[in-house]
Length: 361
Image (cartoon, rainbow, N blue to C red):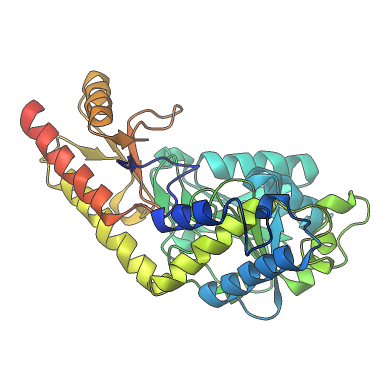
């Protein structure tokens, strides 16, 4: 079997070793005579997988004891609403850092719930950079400040995070969670859909400080209160059990690779190959994001014309490359190089880019 060079933006690449292990265990998990998909989420076998995934997440990401690790459903898009429903207080606005399409969607949902303010924005730069930390102005009475750590469409990423004092810092890390070590204690809440770095779609990880996962408003339905899931170990209702099982295998894979610090170096090494092909092309390829804001997860670039870009896509697909077409809202080209994208795929893409330039430059 020939594996595609998978640069999809999400759902995205999953390690081959993980897929093969899941294939082996698919029909009969741990000698139970059934798949994990068929098991009760109240049973000991599934709960073992569930709890192991939480423990591995804590270990690999350095999550302190005073945080809950929740496994929810609905993707980051549900968190756009669930977050303000739980944390946005009357008279205390939510502050949002506006860096692109995903931040815009989070802002739009928050405005339905209560008062919001823009703490910083790079809209005037077409979202091709993230703000300097000094540009972020958070009201002292803010309920929280929200950031999107990595914008998949523009290909921008924060390299560091602000100290926000008593105002809880919240981050949507859907597209770069576990791609690098971070100081969890800086954050009140981190959330991420799994389908880019953690496994298949279906489960959303929420890392939330204990004090923010209690005394949530009782005026919102139980399913939308963080404390509901914190009190029930994310087993209040039937969890996305197969997605959690797959995520557990991915977490084991990350640990076997040497942990998050090693994954970060691996990501930087493979991403550099593609950025070098862009920067060394003499202008044949043009990077979209400003250099200091470039993402290690999503590389966005353009060619001299849309016709040439279409030719690039057509020829690359014939060579086994998948997912290189830019987001429909902005066009261009994009290579998503999440944790599970192999070095060999990035080497192959960099070489294809050089060859394509020779033929068309």
